[in-house]
Length: 161
Image (cartoon, rainbow, N blue to C red; front, side, top):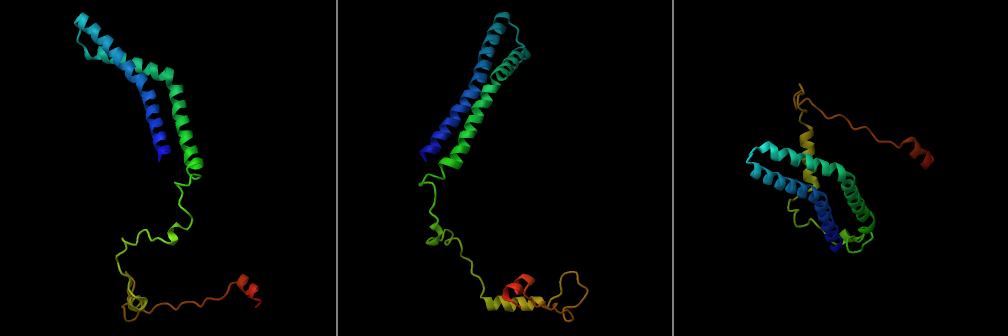
């Protein structure tokens, strides 16, 4: 559990290290443009937005390779942990005979299944009914005879027949 918490904390730190330069750049450019607008008394919204967009784009362009490396390292470590560390850790892996002595869904299975004889009788009754879209009446319809199963050529050769 602590391994997963450590990986999650590392993910948050990666997220902050990727987003923080962009946020700080946008905030500092916004502050500078705001001070300039207050001094010159020019209150135009597009003047404040355009330098922010350009500066954030510049930060992403300059630091993009580093951002991608941070994310790829986090992803590679995550896959390494998922496929190499966790399966070898005994507290995360169930024993091979875990379900031998337990019934995990026993409390959820409350429905009753009909006896096989009742089910067989129901199937016999339903076999007398014509399939949907048939022009025959149920009285004249008969189920097709089941073909007799015989052994295949390989089975006959194994049996010596």
